[in-house]
Length: 483
Image 1 (cartoon, rainbow, N blue to C red):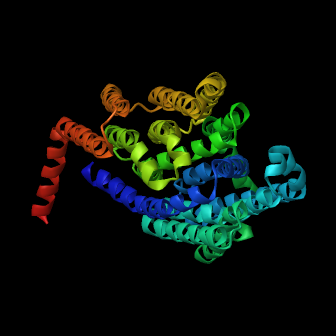
Image 2 (tube, rainbow, N blue to C red):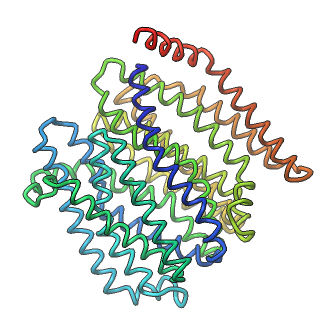
Image 3 (spheres, helix red, strand yellow):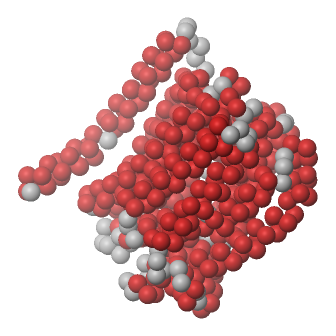
């Protein structure tokens, strides 16, 4: 099991490098952007992004999930090519049709959504990106299923750097304002589509599109489609409710809070990219279930600590990175950090139903959570604004892994230590929230006390896992001596 955990940890670290680079570059650009864009501008950008995120989900049809499952059903490369070829040509056709419709209707749509605050180009450029971003998405999945984390990271880092570089050029230097943000995304995805074509030579020929392969893949993916839509509703509709009940400025501040929270995705995202291929690759091994249970336990301790750190230090992070108009996003950042951790738990929970090829539980969980988040948004946002929206999202998101763990245990039982993980995470969350309510005499004292609290939490985690750490270290020592 140690070897398998080391492999997962190694892959996660490699995938995490791309997130770290993207975050570091983002850290440099956020202070600039928050001084160029007022919260209302960020509100417009956020609304357009989440709208096209939904359209992208509809165009994808969860074929990425299906391609992962079909890829591992065989070692025959020609058959694997049929899986990817079917996915690519199906999504290209669907996305191109959607892009044409959006472009033709953009003058009408932009007036309906934003009235005098936006231009048709704000919709035209993302519509083009619906098509140009397909191949970059496909190639990263292609690298992942072939267990090539280094290639995945090199590709994603390169695209991130080019995208942000173009953003700086168009927004900061050329002063294209909001248009520059979407132009950078579209041009970057076009460049890396060409790179993907070169890298995947022999895999994307039209002859590999098979209707006979498409139908069973779509049948498998069908339960994931409403689940994906529900995921969007669960995590994105808050912006629509915020602009309805409040204003675009509230949406913009919420968006910055979500961006700061996404620092947690450096770790959860890296884990999720490594987890799915890893989990499927060991599913036929004798100790697979024990490995899954150990991963769950370690994930809970580590991510619970990191989410608590974000909750504690969110005000200081915003103070350093953003203009004063955005400093009010601290509670949003802390709450949504936990939301990302819960999403990470969902990835772990879903392995049971995925192995059993019974993904319908995922769709049901997402639909329930979606209804709950909409109800909570309507109740909380009028009174508590962006913080109420963040609480609604987290509360509803908790339903998803809870339901999937419950259903997954019936079809593929795994000995997870639920009670230990829940209690530890609740304890650290309670400490972090309590610290946020303390009034400090000066910034220096505030940072010192918060740092001390963080170190004490880390010490608690190390002591609580002392036996596990000693076991791992002893095995590593024996392996090193044996070498």
